[in-house]
Length: 405
Image (tube, rainbow, N blue to C red; front, side, top):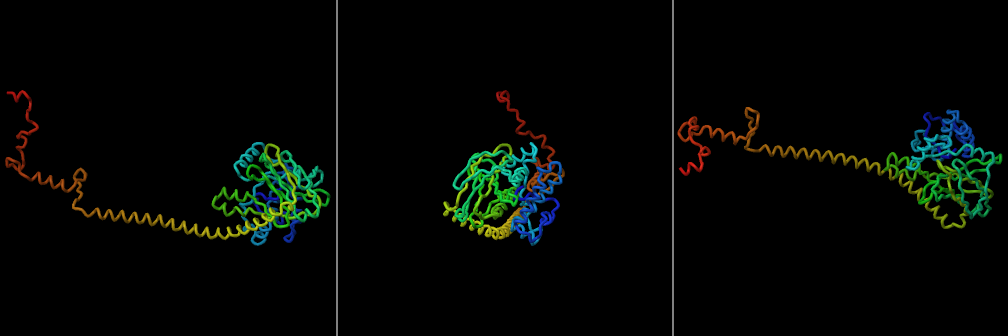
């Protein structure tokens, strides 16, 4: 199960109908309904039921709309048409993949194609039943570990009033660049833990990392898959989509008490090595203030880009229009000049004549031949019949023997 939604199903039903909630349901009611249905139809629990897999996708897709305030508003206003369904994330349940498919998924992941993976139903059920082992993670400390694929290590972070008021930061890094998820669970009425938040690891420099920030102001997570999918279709459009991946986190503060986090192994073939840290924001007051300021600037920049994209598209269309006209005008000018040169060339005293054999010859040559045929020969004969009797200079015998004689 994941807090992100998969690609849209072929036949789309009303998300409220799919999750069995009303249009005025609260976020918590929607979340609870999603948890129950996602666990009910999870592929791990329905291996022999292909119908359940489709229902699982439909539930996840519906939740991806209703869990996002902006997408929910768009859907309530204008239905599915208002949503950019092609920007929805793609999810894969690793525990349900065959060996060949897993290899292909790993290859695409290496190439930078975003692939969302679901969390094993076994891990979710154990958390809901409260049967997981929870290790303590005191504030200001870190723990190193290695978690098997599709398994999770759980940690309990206990905070007092002062720490809760200042804010808490939980971060996980992997120097081995392992793929993992950072999970946050809320306490359920039965004593178990229900998944509330998840962050997928992303490569930052020479490590992979994921973080959760509970700082009493709205913190955003960056869903890089939105930009990656746009980049594959249109690199130019990807720039304008880049900040659209900024999504508000559902939880911005924690109350005093013990809170449950987990590191989930999301590698395809091997365990994930990691370091998890729990910090109080009071030690990082300047850094926290900088984060608040930069988040505000990024949101402002996102709005600016939305307006600028409209201007850019208009200018680009105009540029394309004048570029096309440039090509047409150039072709037109070239043709006119060609015709002009042709007309200039027609002003000449030399006329082209076609003879019997069809070969063209110049008029000057024709005139010369006429002159030569009409001129008398030396002996006065017009027809020149005696020409053959005259000795040509090239018929003279110039042998040395004749000269001596």
